[in-house]
Image (cartoon, rainbow, N blue to C red; front, side):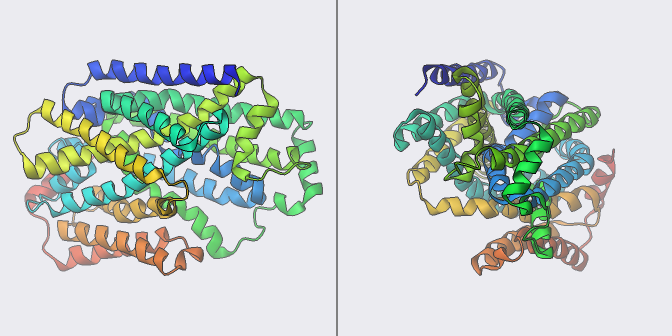
Length: 482
């Protein structure tokens, strides 16, 4: 273990805790803790949304997929780019406006209940349950990834690495809430961006430039250069369909609700999409360059390609910073998932069902306690390195996308939608994803496709077969127009 790498990691982790302490002093009520008081500027909104979205997949998963399969892996990047742009373009501003008009809703379950005047609280409870279920397991898988990074980098025993990483993440999320998460994600997003630009540029330069890299890969196997190698129509549709998931990811769309003003959305979209496109290209080219760079000594695990480049191309100090970018990617997603889960407990269960007159200070502490409890459960699940919870990650994105995506889109743009449509869509979308995966159809067509379609159909059909929303709801719909 290099002393320089260790020092870099320690400085980085201390910096994240300092941000948490500063945000602690700025957090006075539940809106501050869950949405930062709707005060985020466009830059922080954009980069925190991007960093919480991409996770270690951008630095480990995508480069590893390209390293093993070549350019036929670019379809998922294309789908994600289109989906993210449409989400920023159509959903962001409308959701920011509507959540404020609709009784200042601060969580997705809160918005759905207020939007449809659901006094039964069924919408709130079911959506909160979906969030808690998926995110607890999702968080656990991220902590496994963080532990493996610590384990591989510092030679720590797995359990020790798991608890060290987990304690740091819990600490700054517990203290500062949304502000801490958003500001740490902002800095982590910058770090991830720089790492994904520097590594492929240096690697390709070492190989003699882009032309030499392409020629070298072509000599190894020309199929690596073909985006259609081994792809079927359903395979391409499945990869492109990842973009549908954006409309229903609570930890991403909560950033739209927190931005300072609707007027900040265009600049935030420009920054966010620029970050994403360059980041995806950097990840693709990192894996692509790895095919040629490690041709004589193939990597036992394709997802090590980013880590290996940091070790062979840079001195220990730079390597430490670049490895910290992987930790940043993991942390930036886990902290967002923890925060959304804790807000579901504080706002959607404790306040809405148990204690309606709870004070703001009380709710903030309930949220903080929830962070600790949920993270502890996730850590306990992660103690088994081969835990089956990791299998859930493959359809967690689909689960959120299919359960919430059409519900969010239609609730923002279709006046005729009612609570029964929202409820049937949410349930049918989530169930379709789970069943589709359980019966093994996911290997033919990504489960988000049927889940998204069935959810949308259920919303429209059930809404049209049941009563039209009352005038009060329709008037509010018009008021939220921008």
